[in-house]
Image 1 (cartoon, rainbow, N blue to C red):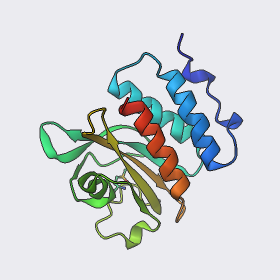
Image 2 (tube, rainbow, N blue to C red):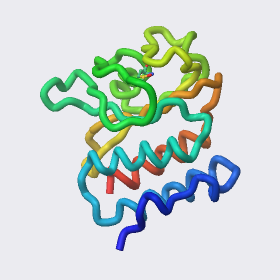
Image 3 (cartoon, rainbow, N blue to C red):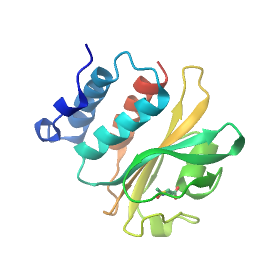
Image 4 (cartoon, protein in one colour):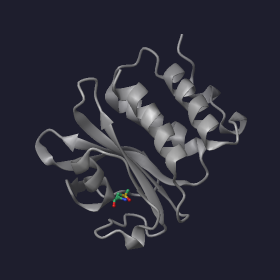
Length: 168
Ligand code: SME
């Protein structure tokens, strides 16, 4: 029987980022056990990540739109209103989607073309989301109100979570 999301308590999580991502990945796997629906999976990942990290200001997915393959369209997220569509190559999300690699931006004001959906955003990380065939299906975008909030530990932790949830 899958564990209920209500049983998840961010206060019981370990202090170091690497350990926290490890525990979260296991918790997320447990909550999503037996649930194949992609919207449910994305909504659960966004909710559990946002609850676990006080530094996260906006946490969510931009999906490759099958109807307009050169655009991303907003998916499940936690945070203030996000822009609806981002063209490939545009902003940090579009750059990560076009390059199919994780982008860490320590200072969004220094990133040409950054899209400021929430003016409090100071730094961000965007991780490509691939399916089991290796096709890009979305990007996971996390923004912070702190400068340089994301590092290699966030990259490793988030990449491991999206790999487990969407590429298995
Ligand atoms: N930060 C993104 C835009 C999306 S929002 O901030 C929710 C970017 O420049 O790609």
